[in-house]
Image (cartoon, rainbow, N blue to C red):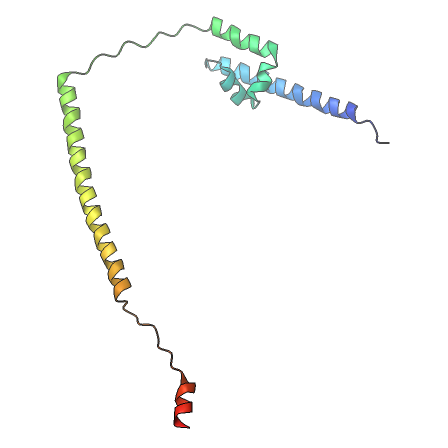
Length: 145
């Protein structure tokens, strides 16, 4: 019969959990000191723990939610202004210039590809190296006998 090792396993699990909780506490303190917004994902990354583990820790979740309530409200970004006609015109000019550049590049690449295909075809039709011919010496020997 095997020895009951569950007490050792339970003890190791408690130690791992305590270490994770200590890392989480240190990460929370660090994030607060840097005035960083605390999210579950960012908190998990900073503490080196899994997000799923944080969701099993009600005390940590409560602290995260409380930090959102206590955090100063950030102003919402202003509504973007519409681009001026001159700005749109400049964008169009740049786009047309880029299209012309790409068209010229495509033309050059197509030409290079056609040349490469031509070289390959000419190599297949008339290879520059001819394979060595094999002679059958035994047939010559029988003819002279």
